[in-house]
Length: 394
Image (cartoon, rainbow, N blue to C red):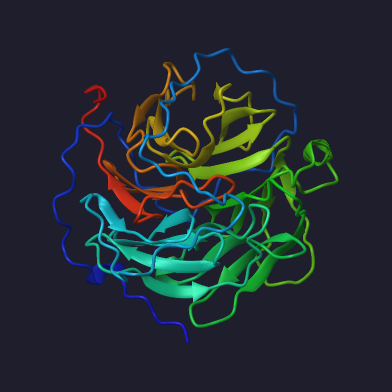
């Protein structure tokens, strides 16, 4: 039996968080509106190389991080203490199993978190109360698959619907979840392979969903217009169906899918890794895609992202930090090299969600393969509060 999770508006007031000075951004909460972005005039042109940039400074992992003696074996989360206390006051939940994605709930007092390997969705709370299981979805967590991303229905306050990108033994797919019901398929038959099964989803309107797929281990498929692998797809039919559906290709050439994050002006930001280079793309509100606005030749492992009025925050896996990119709101151009916050404080980041203009919630994947390096309370959800703009980095 699935327990009904408590509503976010019942959470207790937040307690003071960590007082560390962190590099600043101004984030904005993205509220789904009735209107939708126009993706009917998208272009499928190949990407041109982005301007050369200075590689992102990546510090080595903390020396105290333990290396697993059996990296090929799953590393289960600790179970000795169900409350899983963490000495860091910024950590609001711990002892999770590979927390790939996070979706902020209305009111920003709680959020839903996805566990990749177990298929479990849990609700975590700002006040640090013990996380509550919402539902467990049958998934195949092998070959970097499993429960990979979450998105709330634009009318979540009325219908309570959750959408998820998942892996089965035969495909990757998008499912719709109503609490107390079994997941229902919305988009099936996305290619599944031996690697690069990660994907992401985000709404661009009441009935339009963007779906970011990995190349499933086949770069040729990412360039093949007849394949749905390695693409940013637009899905306009959200009805329940076990049959494959037509989708519009907004952007081809995706390797390892990272994340999707809507901007407040109707744009969509996309992260991926292709050809050993990490990239950040901007998709305009008209569906037009240009060259990547930023690249990381040293590939720090781009994952989820959150967008504000003039900044994009990108979670880094191998980089063990959050990268802050200042964006010109008129041109969409990145003017300066990204700054870093929370570097080596929590390990490998994956999911990120904006809770307010000055606060993000992040998840870690330190128990993930092939080289897990978990801390005693991993995997965790932490609240990071940036300092005023221009204050620098401690």
